[in-house]
Image (cartoon, rainbow, N blue to C red):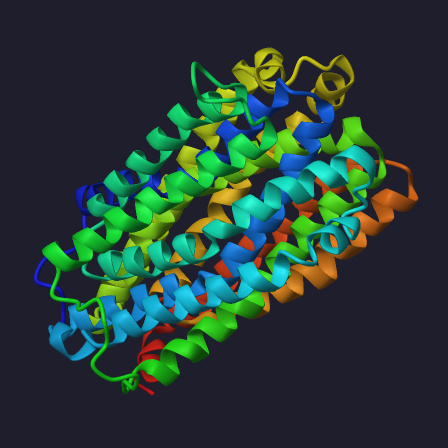
Length: 449
């Protein structure tokens, strides 16, 4: 079934703008935490960087059901059979809640051992454990919110996610200085106050998402049955995306491990660079989210020509956004580091490698755009293979070689740069083979199967 009208730039923008705003909520919360905690000292900055990275690692691994829910719901939306998938959404939500509770209970007692794997020790280790014990309460809250917003995106509505994210970011921004430094009857809690601010913000986001699900959609909050014809496909897609995200986070882990081993100032500088890198990733990912939503719908409509054209349009726009971010960072180069820390050693190390973060922005855009397209059409195998291949064949060897050569943070960020180049090129080639002018028929057979 062909789409009644070709997808235009305006259609993409309508979805992408709220997706950009909603997508940066988690990294914006982490950036706010980093900025306020940086004033407490280098050890606090490093601790939040390590603990936040691990928290986001777990969330991203487990939250792949959002992309899976989006893909299935968008396909049924394109096929005009949305009623048939109503029962799947509450199953995904409560499974995510269960996973979040499980990982909160499992990771908490082993937090010290986990952060020792990052080479954390002494004051940095103790503070990271304290921060994580509180922050991990947010696992079920974040995962439930991801599942709900995946359903929202599947029905082509990204504005609800945007308002939810804005609310959460605002709550975190207000509570961070209040709980860290104290005011009036509220005592200052230091690094633990920052963790509580994040958890409260996530609770507000989850509660708002639940209310909107109940009042604005036909999806029930509680499933009548715990079985659904699409459940197996949902878990297969989630499994492939899970493997992909494990490879993704192996890179973040190795980068943090190497940086922590070089000293407190190094992990402080790396934490700032990584938080900015992740913020940019989610910002650029807004157009990828729009591409994911539209790709899922066009896949349901079997509109292969528009799928190919729209996908490359999303890639081009994403590269422009990445280039604009790179220009902004380049212009603000002397002033960005001092926003996060007043430690001269950390600032020097940060400015020494920040140019590599700037350089990656348009390169990242290609990989992120294709990530969204492949998620939309439900091709988790391609994403899994691209991440595993680029991680094992590019990131790990380059990071190891940089470490052996004594490049320290330069080695870490050289690995990230090479890794993103490999990811983007790999996915571009696979997409063109499967969905290009000569690949449409093959795509049709793949997704009809």
